[in-house]
Image 1: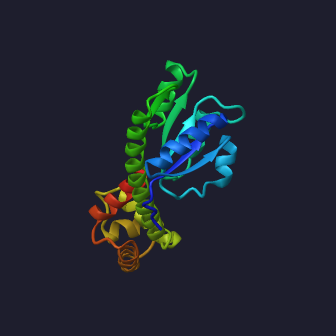
Image 2: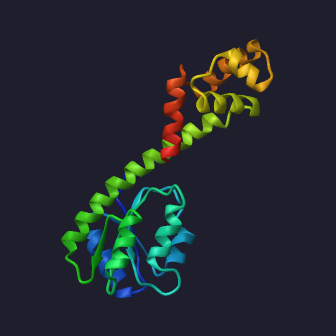
Length: 207
């Protein structure tokens, strides 16, 4: 299910920062949830809700950059805006390479943060839609049998040799059997041609 309410997660070990940001963002119409540590956030986040994460760079335990790395290893539809009181150029470069919307040094203007959050929320919704598309495509591939997967792999690896006879010779099965499998593959993957199949695989790889 897609959530459209603008949700902002604030992760900062400074209670005053959490309180002031929660108040300011709440007044702007955002739903706000605050956490005192990266691990507390990970324990609570379901991994699926599209949101913007306002993340302190320098925290004891798991740092903001480490949390970003964990999230980047998942399909979570989160956009990250870093805030920091002592980050330098190397840290900001690493954060931006990791896909952060911005790396703001404290004190920052609330108007700037609001603008970055709004940008982040739009990106998060895009990420959520892309993740849902990838999962739907993967679900189609999961319908294939082992033999059907072999035939798909052969077709993609050798696009110049995709006749049923050529594939049958390679796999040691009859062309008629290949024809049967190909029909089932197209049906299960919901594609009509090798070009559509190639496009489908490309979308999954980009994910």
